[in-house]
Structures are given as structure tokens and as C-alpha cells.
Length: 176
Image (tube, rainbow, N blue to C red; front, side):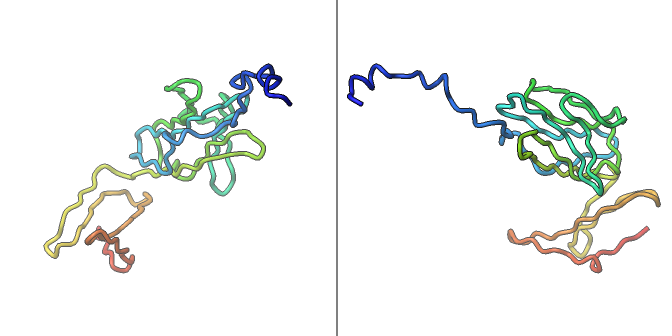
């Protein structure tokens, strides 16, 4: 094609900009959320270029539980909601008055083919009444008051000179 024909054949390519499809906003992505029992949990999910695709929230436990599809809540529990604080692209899942049983893996899913999802692990701290203090031997100890039917999750570690050492459970003493 001669050069003058190419000049007459100019397009405004911004009109035809190819969509990259929906994606998760990397500035809003987290992998873990920890809240205290009884507080409100916010599991962030912000979608860019959502277009016509449906956003869903799932709970991944022994069975996949559908929490929401679009704006529709599929579970009876009214503690779950989609407040859209930051606008229509904000699909943050709000869980009010969290219970220990609410802990687990949740997935924010975009209804593309194939499905695209991001997992967020929700951890529930069982109590506020925890005390961490060094003992006479220089080790750290944590005391926590919990009822006999409560689930207690212990995570122990030792940080020395930027190296983390795991402590075996047999090295942990529990007193009541």
C-alpha cells in the first residue's frame, strides 16, 4: 500500500482498545484477614474492568458454600453483606459479629470462562484477654482465658537475628 493511502487510512484506535477483561485490583488484594471474635470482618475484593461479568463469594470448607452471586445473598445469615463502600467495583464481603466458626478460606470469584478467583483466609482471634510477657528465663509466654468448649489455635515462633525458628508443640506448656 502506498504511503499516501496509509495516511488516508488512519483509525482512531482508542475507540477499539481491546478490553483486558476483568481483573483483581492488586492494590486491594490481601491473603489473610484476622479479626477478634464478635468484631466485623472485611474481606476486600475490588474488580477492575468488571464489564458484564458476575462477582460471587464462596466459602471453601468441606463443601463449597455459595455466599453471594452478584448482589444476591444465597445464605440465610444476615451478618454477610456487600456494602460497596468504594463504589460499584468494590465487592468487599462484610461479616458482622464474627464467630469462631466463620474462620476459613473464602473466594472472591469473577464469572469468566474459566472462572477467576482470589482466596482470602479469615482467622478469628478467640479472645481479647491475652497477655504476652517475657518470663524469667527470657522466653515469651502468652496467657489466655478460654472456656472449655472453645477452640484454641496456638502459633509459636522465635525470632533471633532475622531467622525464624519453629517451636515444636512438645516444647509448649499449657497451664490451667
